Amino acid sequence: MSPESTLMRIHQAARKEFRERGFHGASLRSIVKSLGMTTGAFYGYYKSKEELFAALVEDHYRYLLDRFRQAQEEFAHLPSQRQPEVLGDFSGACMFDMLHYAYDHLEDCQLLLCCAEGTRFAGLVDEMVQIEIDATHNYFQVLEELGRPVPDIDLRLEHILITGMFHTFFELIIHAMPIGKAENYLREMRAFYTAGWMKIMGQ
Image (cartoon, rainbow, N blue to C red; front, side, top):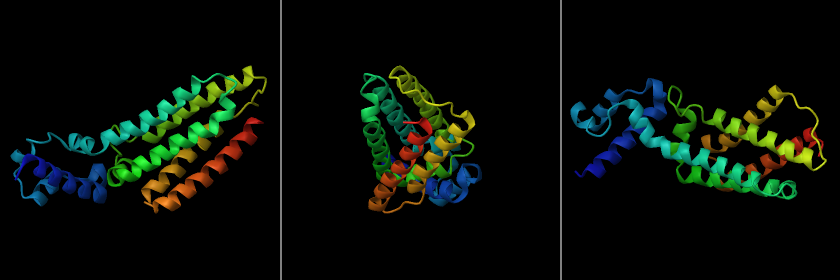
């Protein structure tokens, strides 16, 4: 059997183990046993459970963070006058890109979202929330410069609302809704949160 075939078998066995037990509960011994491999042969591919889990989710973790950060940076570099006009277009394109990417890599993205507790990937939502908070505050400054100041918003409420938005979005992926329904739910979700934020911002 080629090294590539063996690697695919390791990944499939690891996905099953992580999905059923989570990162904390997963056992390398169980994975190796299910493959009929020796421990020494397995360690020729991965040195630890952490390294194996990273092989499954790191690219997807990086894509989601980078795509979201890229959208925020591109938006922030637009002229101030244009930002209110295209806010919805930028955020919508980004969210749909992330949704479609996640559906193209569904099983591993579900591992990332549901089974990463105890790894360096467990903070994905918190990292995205912080990016969104920073971008939101920058946008408040733009509105101030445009003569459209935003009322004071309680920082705890802001954090709760933004965190809730990401959890709502990721629910689509966690539950693997049919893609057509997921796209429709995302449109409805964005309409709901956009209307709420416009109200809170007094816009």
